[in-house]
Image: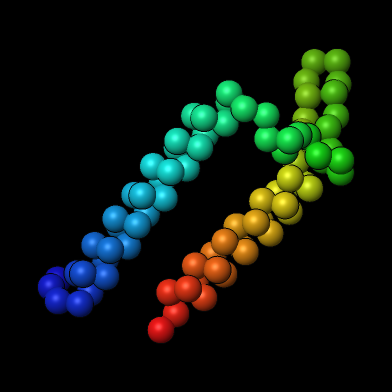
Length: 81
């Protein structure tokens, strides 16, 4: 395993590591800040029973997906040769 494939794999692993570190920092810092109700948006389904609680953050997932799609699309457009 040498040559261009090894370089691409190395770059991918470094990029994935950077993304994981940034995500970890965001998770640690987010517990101290309010994200404007993110996670409790209208449309998210929450059911409280006597002995349990079920929460389906459907709208939050849609918003997160749209934001991540936009970010990845912008990165792709910037890095396109």
